Length: 145
Image (tube, rainbow, N blue to C red; front, side):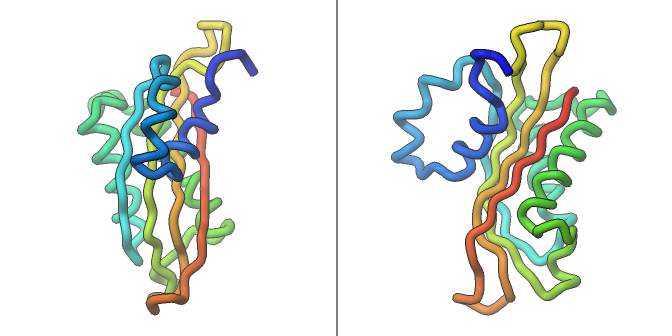
């Protein structure tokens, strides 16, 4: 690791912090590009689409470059494995999620040759689609671009 701010830790904090808490954290974000969003669904494809759309709209990935879209997809899937405890299914298992997410792009290594990396973090709830039957969850995925 380097002395740069770790993009995974940054992504987790961005997904978990409230807007008020974010104010104090904001000055540390000069070395990364990021975006935030929310998604609630019983459909995994909606979760994936929400993150991809946010990343594209906020200029974190170039939609015409396959390698960037591919890296983002793998980071999303890795993050969702944490959210779903390794069972990449929600609606099929009668589970629903309510998630805040962040996408962070940066160069986390001192050696510039290591290139850019992308991290996707999720924080929120997962559970049966019955109000009050959910619990907290978190997931993180990181991939090189």
